[in-house]
Amino acid sequence: MRYLVLIFFIVLNLNAIIISSNDTPINLLKYSKIYHDLGSKETIQTIIKKQKDFTNAKKDFIDYSNLINESVWIKFDLENNSNILLNKTLVIDNILTETIELYEIKEGKTQLLQTTGMFHRKKFDGTINFNLSIVLEPNSSHSFYLRVQDIQLSLWFKPMLYNQSEFYKYDTNKQLIWALFFGGILSLIIYNIFLFIFTKDLIYFYYSLYLIATLMQNEFALYAKFHIFPMDDAEFVKKDFYFSIYYINFLVTFAMALFIRNFLQTKQYPKIDFSLKTLIAIIPIYYILQTTFNIFTLELVVLFLFFTPYYFLWIGFYALYKKNPQAKFFLIGWSFALLGWLSLFFQHMGIIPVRYIYSYTFETLIITECILFAIFLAYRIRHLEKKKNDLTKELLEKQKDESKRLEETVKLRTQELNKELKQNELLLKELHHRVKNNMQFITSLYALKLNENADLQMEEKLQDVERKIHAMSIVHQMLYNQKNLENIDAKIYFEKVIENIKNSFEMDNITFKLDINASLDIEEAIYCGLIVNELVTNAIKYAFDGKEGCISINLNNHNNGILLEVSDNGKGLTKSDKMTFGQMMVESLATEQLEGKLEIKVDKGTHISLWFNNKIKK
Image (cartoon, rainbow, N blue to C red; front, side, top):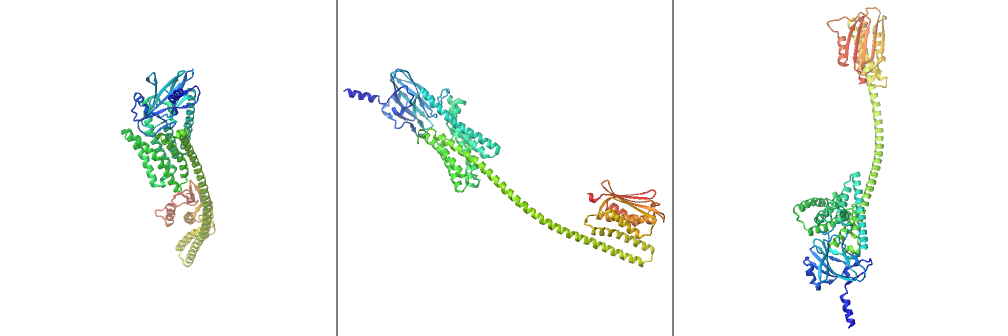
């Protein structure tokens, strides 16, 4: 009989947890019974009456995969067999859990001890995890009911019982790890923003936008929110939760679509590029519709967010199939991201308890993906720099080859032009030589004509024509005998013209003074030679009447032009109503051909000056 009583006592206390002052955390599910309340219909009064419906937990964590309103009730007993007061902390490790209530059955009465959860937070006290304080008096037993409820997300958590010191250590370590993840991604954001500012490459802006959205969307962003925002305000928390689910998640997709278009250069794949542009255009439209009409349900959002990463992965494989050099880098990085999102999805759906296989699976995968993409983008900079250097080197080589080719072409063409120039010079000299010979032939004909004609007046006219022709032939003779075919030495030219005039007259009483200090081109030389020939001939004939005299010929640069002066100290030019042919020729050559200004002064002789623009100086 004594043994039966002992067995009965052991059975009654089988699930009671003996509490001591040690720091070892205790998993309550191992010593508890649970009741799954679909629809969250039960209250503490109704649940007490369903003791027979409670069952033992099959796992040491809860993972229900229902996106519906559901609760789980956990019944557990605690015994303090020591003589000291014990303070314990009950911790729910899912920081997205909506409602947590702790009830105690004491002296046959049920009382609500504490309420916490995402929408029931108290003022931030420096701890992140939901926790409930439990006070165990010395040598006492306590019966508790724990109700955990989620209306929108799947229900998953692990209820752990800590000593207060151990809890603060656990919570601080978690905050430290989150801070490291947060700081790591924030550093990558700042790094890529600076790259965008300095390179003006949009791919760094898109990646920064993706990192910002990822940072805002993840649980470790809550660490910053606790320090910045009023997370104890239920209305604010609901809006923040709604904004994260319905907006931030889509911002991640939006930013990644922009990044993929740039990273994989999908313009070369028209259909895929069109689908990405369509996705990018749809998301702002979704924002407008959701903000205005609130028509999209959580199930639709989850479905969209579940399939979109796979579509991005397929684009990466297609780009790899098309031998896109960036595809392999994208597939490596996005594979980590996809695994991270899947782990989070499976965790919240209660399909695979990733959190209890490795505590920071999602965070580790995401930070790995972010670092890999940062490395790939850095590699992209190096690749582009190398490509730029290769193109610069190739361009320099081409420029060098082109310079050599052009140099050879210019050299060959110069030789050809020099050859042609020499030929032209020879031809031009030959032309001048022929013109000179023809003029000399004409002059010889006039000389023969003069020998046949006994009329003195006719003889004088023929001699005058002969002198004019000879003056022109002198120019061609000089050009034939010199290398420069553009202009001639005016001093030598006028000396030859005067010498020819002297040979035409018998005169010992007239002297000549020449002051020639300018150069003339061919056309100017011929016109000036004809003018000088006419003026000097007239002076010899009419200025001196057999008396001694002097004729001066000056040619100098003057007022950016040429000044030709022919003067004598004879009796002076007599005015006549009728101009002679010689006077008309001089005036025509001076004003029309040379476009100059002709002035005639009679004062102790005749002074004729002609100023004209010099073509050589134009």
